[in-house]
Length: 328
Ligand code: TRP
Ligand code: SF4
Image (cartoon, rainbow, N blue to C red; front, side, top):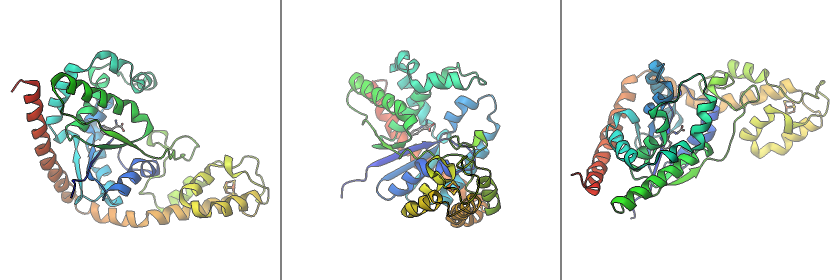
């Protein structure tokens, strides 16, 4: 039987996960988990490139995040779960790549230009932040991954990874594969204030929220502003609550659209219903998470197992890379 292809993705350790995370990359990982050989890791070094002034939360966030991932169904028996900073071979590969990566490739990278402008409060004029994509290329190529699930915002980084692989291959002889992206459907989950759901905007529904919290958060959401009485005809396309119905009740969406358009349901009732549906979808997860949280040793054991395996694979890559370059 042919070997399974390798799927690899890195995840920022952002602390407890919310619905925006779930409907992005994680759904893809869960869907394809059995089809590929999986590497799933938390990128604490990448987090450090923007949080180096306040790194104190990174480790806690990482543990919260990995607990959520396991409770969601990322299965440590078939997926190698690890943290980036345990794989000490990654910085060595980053170093070799930094020798061959022209500065201009990094400076013209759209994510770089954008973030330096947007995250004004942080001083990002550092070497580490500029070379963020070089570190990412090392994450991916050290495993020689075939498929990388990413959101659209990460495409320029993946393109750079391929360029670095090509440049290495042309300088030192064919060695690295060029990994392909697996784009997560652009399910842009809207937060309770209508902007993209994000922890930093304070508009997120967390996977760990109880029913009361979810209900209160959904109750605050703006619906169709033209609708004053429950019997007024509504416009679901402009309503943020309706976007949750699209995510959770797609099979009944016509019916839900019509009851709103015909003024057959009041917004409060409509909101409480979707709050219940979201909460019900999270119940099993929340129970599994409670069990996992009782045994923190288990999480550390998984990280240790991931580290051992990935370090072994990475050492092999480093050995061969050194030989290819000719310094060994
Ligand atoms: N840059 C990615 C993000 O911010 C995270 C990441 C780091 C990653 N290394 C990776 C994703 C390797 C895929 C593969 O989301
Ligand atoms: Fe939105 Fe539901 Fe109100 Fe229609 S009834 S505007 S879908 S909350």
